[in-house]
Amino acid sequence: MVNQAGGALSWGGSPGLQSAPKDAAGKISVPLLGLVAENDRTTKSVKVVVEESKKKGNQARLIVYPAFKPRENPNGIAPGHMIFSAEGASLWEYDLKDFLKLAITASN
Image (cartoon, rainbow, N blue to C red; front, side, top):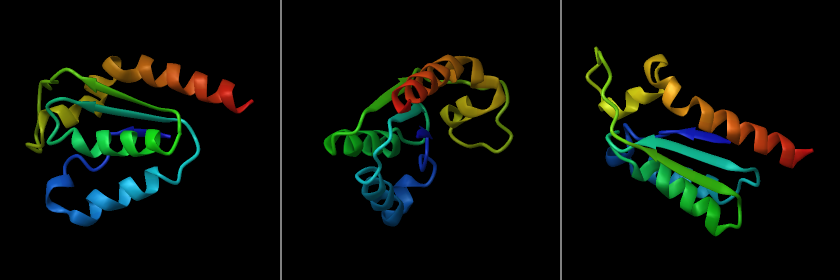
């Protein structure tokens, strides 16, 4: 399972969003990779999910990337969230590929 800044844009304004991913993370039994940039609206949404998954004994890894500054941000969202656009893919694609290789190997 891969969490790319899931809930980061809405985390602060939604108590339901703060509890639902945490509850779900405690129920998964597959490896988890959490990715977020330090200048997303929050890193807490991903950190909480990874931490909860680890508490339940699941294999989980968190990567917090340095601040990302996109060339353009037409929607005006948190610049760090744009790391998961095509422009930022080169920064996280190898981490994702390595995780997927390990997850596939572990499942065989």
